[in-house]
Length: 175
Length: 146
Image 1 (cartoon, each protein chain N blue to C red):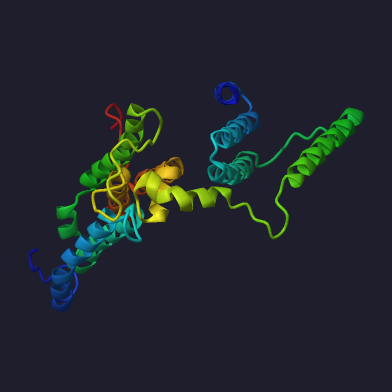
Image 2 (image 1 turned 30 degrees about the vertical axis):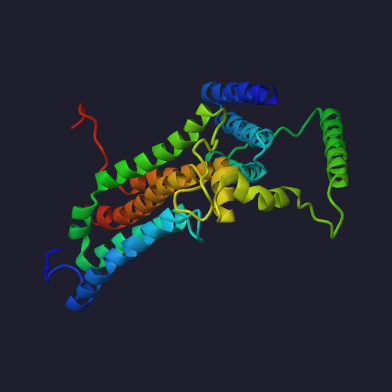
């Protein structure tokens, strides 16, 4: 259910990113797609991919904003300061509330959570049949992450081939 | 392998390469096939396979290496590896879910065991090996051809 909401939101944000005229709004809409993808990874129980997606998304967003907005960032400072201050305080309160709730759930110092690892070590051989426990984890329990890594390698090879191909490919009608 | 003295390195390097490159390739294939039994797997074995071709290219010049694995063959094999991995993942839907291990597990410590894991290792090995070699090929060949 949450996944469908996220997917619909991502499709909507992608359409907005294509159709909107302003370049900054388009970049921010692309960022919204990336953050929704991060949440989708979390819903699908792949937290390491979600962390990677979050870091890469923030980096790409900063680089894209830095590259597209070189000057004349339209800053609106005057007016509406009551609304701005109140909304800022409201967001700070929400952030503190959620971080307090999240910090309460952390395990105490010296008592690590080993539940997932314990399950892998105990049932690894009987569930997958692979003796090498690393292979059993990356190709059976967490095979979805490995698919993502393989996709990253594939994309990088395509990018290198496309960038280094010096002559380029001409269309037929332009000589 | 022709022994053309104009391309590549000296005769000593060429002779040693001719003796060792098959063993390096074989070791890479061993690492890939035994990924579920011993340390290693598709990624590490693929890098070793790619290094054997890089070795060939460094010793004999780029023409002989390109005659063994051309750029189009490298691109096609890379795509085939990726599609093979994805289709193994999709085959899990026959049993109910993505990446489900549908093949029989077999007895542990055998070479033919662990269901789909060796097949995944082979697919990743093809993909990583050919992909890394394609990157090296692009850096060497495409840079010179202005």
